[in-house]
Amino acid sequence: MLRAHLGSLLIPLLSIALAPPAAADPPGGGRTWVEHRVLPGERLSEIAARYAVDEEAILRDNGLPRRSLRAGGTLRVHAVRVPAPRKRIEYIVRFGDNWTSIAERHGVTRQALRRWNPEQPRSFAAGARLTIWVDGDYAPPPPTGLGLDREATGLSLQPVAMGGESAGQPTRGRLIKGVQLPDNGSLYTIRRPAFAFGSSHAVLNLQLGIAKFRQRAGYLGPLVVSDMSLYRGGRYARHESHQSGRDVDLWLPLRAEVLVERGVNSDARPQDFRQLAAARPGDIDWKASWELVKALLRTGEVQYIFISRARQRHLYRAARADGLSVQEVGEIIQYPRRAQTAVVRHSPGHDKHMHVRFRCADWERRCR
Ligand SMILES: [Zn+2]
Image 1 (tube, rainbow, N blue to C red):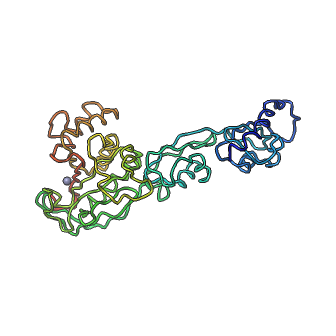
Image 2: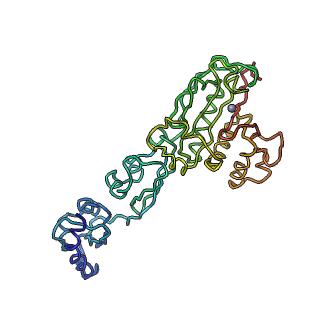
C-alpha cells in the first residue's frame, strides 16, 4: 500500500524543494515554517496535533492530493507550536518492561512505539532493541528496578515479622519462629518457599540489600533466592550450614544476552528455574554480581559471602573495574591471596551462586 502512494508523492515532494524560503512568508500570526520528517506509520492527525495546525493546511501547503504520507519524506508545516526537533534513540528492553511501560516512560504513545518497531513481536524479550523517537528536550528518567516503575521509586520492602530468632551455629543450630521470606516480585524470585525461612534479622537485611542492589545497579534481570532454612532450622538436604536461619543462597545474576538467548520473557514471571541458572562463568553478569555484593555489604549485617575461588577471579576484576584499589578489594575479596580476613571467601561448590551469611543480631542471645 505504501508503494502505491509513491508515485503521487514524488511530485509534491519536488514542489516542497521549490517552495519559497521561510523569510518570504508574511510575518504575523506567530507561525513558523518547519520541516517535518515523516516517521514510519505516522498519521496526518498526529503531525497536525504536533504543530497545532489543521490537517487540511498541511495537505494544502505540501500540495498533497490526499492523506497519503511517505515514511522518510519531508513535509513543510506552518507551525503554530514548534516543539524541539525529534531525535532517534535506541532502547534496550529490560526485564519487566512491556510496550505500555516503555511508551509511558518516553512520553510517546504505545501505538506509535509499535509502528516504529514493526519487526518486534507482541511479547519481546529482555535485550531486544527498540527505536524510539523522542522530543529533543526529552531527558531519560533514572533507571528503576524490575517492576518498581509503578510500585515505588524508593525501596520496595515487604513487612517482616519480628521474633524469628537464630540459635546456635549455622552448621549446628536451629531457628526459632522462623520467618518466611515474603514474596517481593520487584526484587527477587523465591525458588522454593518451603526452604525460605530465616531469622527476622536475616530476612529483613536480605530484602534491604537486594532493594539497594536494584536501586543502584540498574540490573533488571531476575534474581533467584534459593535456599535459606527450614521453618525450624536444622540440617536438611545437601546443606552443611543453613541451619540457623542466617544463610541464604543467591544465584549469580545472568547477563542480559544470556537471558535473551534463553528466551526469558520480559513480561512473564520465570517459572522454569533451570533457565535462570548459570551454566558457564561467561553466563554470569559479574558487574551486577559485584554490585550485589556491595549492596549486601552496605547493610552492615553481612558476615561472609562464600564463592568458590575460581569464580572470585571474575568478581575481583569487576571490583577493580569499579575503581577499587588492590588494597580495597583485598579487604573484601580473598582472591588472589588467601587471606582469612576478607568477607568474600572460598567454599567449594559455590560456582553458580553466592552464599551469604548474615550476622547475629544484637538481641539474638543464643545466636553463635
Ligand atoms: Zn549455601
